Image 1 (cartoon, rainbow, N blue to C red):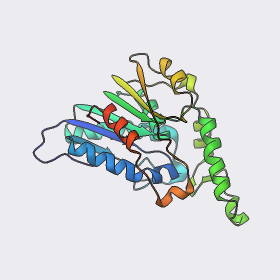
Image 2 (cartoon, rainbow, N blue to C red; image 1 turned 120 degrees about the vertical axis):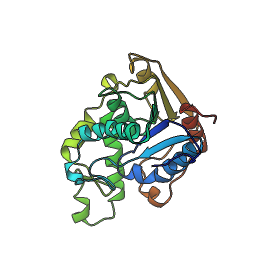
Image 3 (cartoon, one colour; image 1 turned 30 degrees about the vertical axis):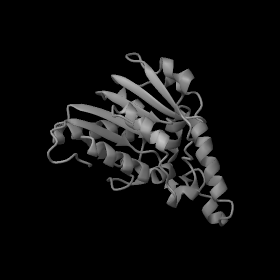
Image 4 (tube, rainbow, N blue to C red; image 1 turned 135 degrees about the vertical axis):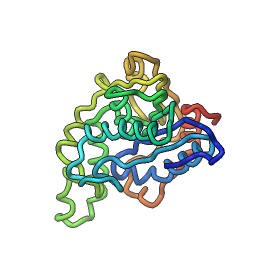
Amino acid sequence: MHHPAATSASRRGVVFCNPFGQEAIRTHRLLRVLADRLAAAGFHVLRFDYFGTGDSEGDETGATLDRWIDDVQLADAMLRSEIGVNSSAWFGARLGATIAMLASRRGAPPERLVCWDPVLDGRAYLDEIDAAHREAGRDLPASVADTFGSEVLGFCLPERMRQAIAAIRPSALGCEARSVHVVAGMGHRGTEEWAPAASVTTRVSVKRIESNMVWMANSGMNGAVVPQDGMAAVVEALGLPA
């Protein structure tokens, strides 16, 4: 949890929704920098790990997309009950953004939903991370390379999780909040086509940025970057001057 200064009486909060696997590692510094900036601006920021990941309880083999969607609602409820937050926003990148979208339709939605390069097509996303896994495993022993399918770059991907991700389709992926903002790199496809029908209660705004984040890259393990135009767009979407 990142808290604002002790003298702040702010009751604004932000829940961060992590990407999956290698992308979560790669964005760790980005999320930390963003959380610190938001806390300095008066937000209570909650960063959490989904069930079976990071410091959370459970084993990664027992993780499901449904459980992770529920985890977002639980994180928001905790932020409201423990801090007394009365205005919450959710921010997610990649699969984390998609999980936030799905969670916004399952229970109480956030006031503001901010998504960076959300996964709109689950099959295309799986193809992308599988390709990265194959590329990373080209020079590995066969006994290690054979984990393909159940593992992606060192992170467990159970078959039921794979099937749930594969079922994600732009036509069936909606979101709800008082305001919905998508930050998209120039290489992110399908955003403008998806946005008009994504919400039944509010218009989804799309902000294009020049930076194309290399989300899935084994070389990014120790080389996370914080693209400034993306950071500025996210901060602005969360209601702060960029």
